[in-house]
Image 1 (cartoon, rainbow, N blue to C red):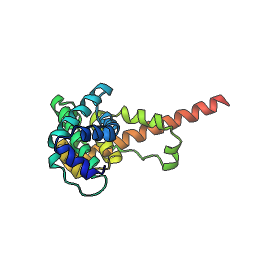
Image 2 (spheres, rainbow, N blue to C red; image 1 turned 45 degrees about the vertical axis):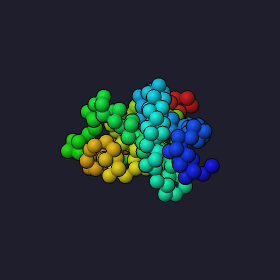
Image 3 (tube, rainbow, N blue to C red; image 1 turned 120 degrees about the vertical axis):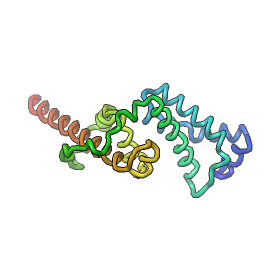
Image 4 (cartoon, one colour; image 1 turned 45 degrees about the horizontal axis):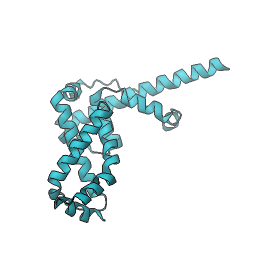
Length: 191
């Protein structure tokens, strides 16, 4: 069944269509929630809450092109994730105001250097970023949202979004350089 028909049937309360929607998009939505949750349990809770809300408001969905159903569902899940974070005030407290950005952004490693860092190490580096930086970095670099969209989602200024991204990138650059320096030293000692 195509996206439009699936959405229409879900809006009418068709449980078979709801099951199909869940089975089709559940794992992708869980992966999205995992990027913004503190742990797997919170990610699962966010995903379940997202589906509850999706089933409640799917009548508002307007199909635009193939893939728009998942995009709409992802936006619902992201909004829930950020609302949850705001309630805990952890995210808001850690977001950098643009005025705090003080030119200590180091040179970023080149593409070739970054390729030499294993993917799991890069994922650990991203996970180790302060939550505010990690959130903006993930929204911008992975989810490909604009600073305007990020600002609207997080309730911050666009300039604050770009400042947080700059700080995240600078922190990752330092981590990558340290990792590469550590690899060079250990490579030399093994010889």
